[in-house]
Length: 467
Image 1 (spheres, rainbow, N blue to C red):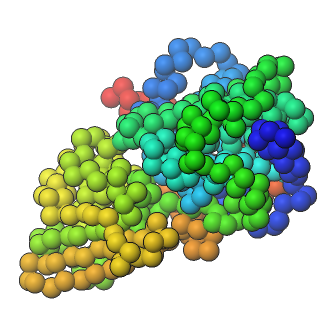
Image 2 (image 1 turned 135 degrees about the horizontal axis):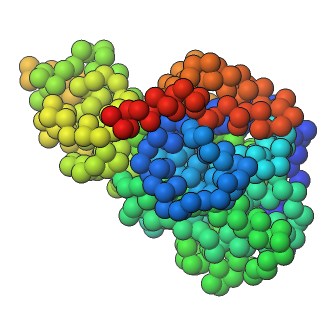
Image 3 (image 1 turned 120 degrees about the vertical axis):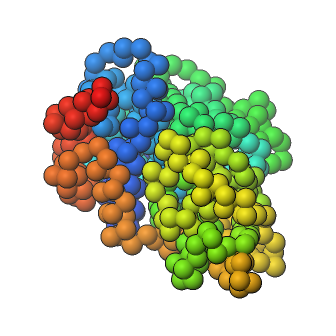
């Protein structure tokens, strides 16, 4: 049996009734977080330009988040997927080495708008897609990650394909074909981190996942050994001897990855690799009342793999700043918090932050600081001008795993802060309520009807734009 056909059989076996209650809970957490960050991201240039570049997409049934407009499902998946990752505020997963929900949910919401799918069918498809992409990740990591691929896109396309095929009710053969098609759609390079292309990776892969499922449904053909062929996905993207396909089934649903390590909810709208150091820095700044004019030097240590894309002492754009450990730590001291506004416009040029950044020194941590199997720790040491030295260590950032979750009130606060950038407060309340009873929705369109801004708010934005 080929990898694609074995995955197809397992995808088809998912159903809502067999999901553990905790899996339903975490899927709803992922959906709530996705709704908030996508609404906020819909205001970002990357999402707007992704839509503009489509020309004049035909009207359709699928809602564009934060816009009074509906387009075809493929176009909606592309634009909403880009919006979901535009702020780099969407959820993560340790197995995946990336962002698991953003590749899946834009395709599912676009499909649900077309078909009127129930909340229960949607949840089963989401968990199936999550399991597929994370278990493929288990087979290829971390060679795949270190080689320079962006797993959110290169592996997320399989999650989007699996979830779409499941919600569409494709049989085993056509689901396997869809996955084989997706193997030729996989793309995404880390060299584009810090630019608009990174969120476009997500829009591209979620659209391609849906498109692969639709092609298979229509009778399109693909190579059945698209994964294990000598010129297939594993050998081309990783290379011989750098992957173990048997790990996909060996750990399948034991446990479900959405349960453990689970969904990592971001507290800060910047690269997740900066978060453990930010937790430590904010703790020190608040406990010791640190201010820039008191600090002589800041040293920070994070995992070497994470430092590769966050050692950016001179960020050149607001997106670049999201990946600058130096900028994020300096901003944490100057403002005692990290907000969306800190990565907008010219905020990264703030003179006080820039002055402090030159005193921030970063390095990979050693096994004397953290165990070799800990990839999510950080240590921060601050030396003051008075000669005092204070240190904080974090084994993993708050919210990084289901065992160290972000408290529900903090999750709701994040959702509301993001959503209120686009919607009225009454809409935000209705959207939150619908997400909390997602499994009870007979038609997911009950929820997506709320994600467009009110006419009053849309008019106000238009007046501001023309002022």
